[in-house]
Image 1 (tube, rainbow, N blue to C red):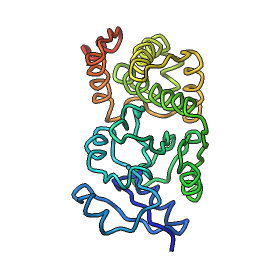
Image 2: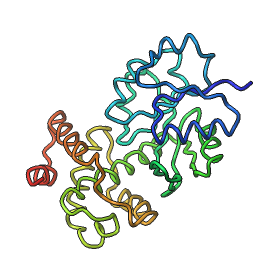
Image 3: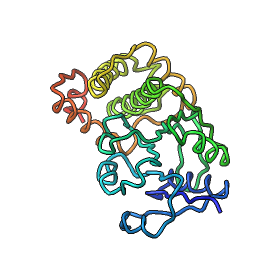
Image 4: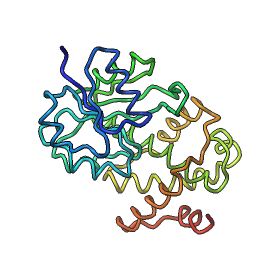
Length: 253
């Protein structure tokens, strides 16, 4: 029998991964919110992968509970993910930037292929391929960092600008580009401070627009938008960064 896979957090996305691994013949063990992960470690044979599929707001609390023996096989997939988020582990996990949606009662909707980087990227590719979700394997650490920043730019720009104008991403770019670019400037400034790296704004925008075009009717303002805005404002305070547009949106919302 193949080594097991543990899925921490069986929401919609976690369930997609679970189904993909089951289709490949891997036994899958779910870890629920109330489960003690250290106890599970003693009950489950050494897993080939531990998929952490909790939301970004819960990530740090969960990582503190992950047994050290599982650190080398961790897979992270959260939105707003950056290297500083896994510093607590002392080693880099496998990371995938999710570019598909999964809502209750609906099949997964792929926007563009999801880039994955790390030791388990091929395994993740194969598991998601079994449920018809495209994964692009990235072999360069810096290239994967850029992929994470593009995803952050996409989700933060659309969500935060959406608080002001609503609508979908096609409308945001065609009808409210000045607003979108003002939000991009703030988000990019934060991303550069959070990573200690400089990025080419125009290159990132072009990559973001590929995702916009992949699902032009994607609604801008998800239910997490207010929390994303507040998190960005909190990061600006933490980093001593002066933002221009985001505080205005916050004051008006």
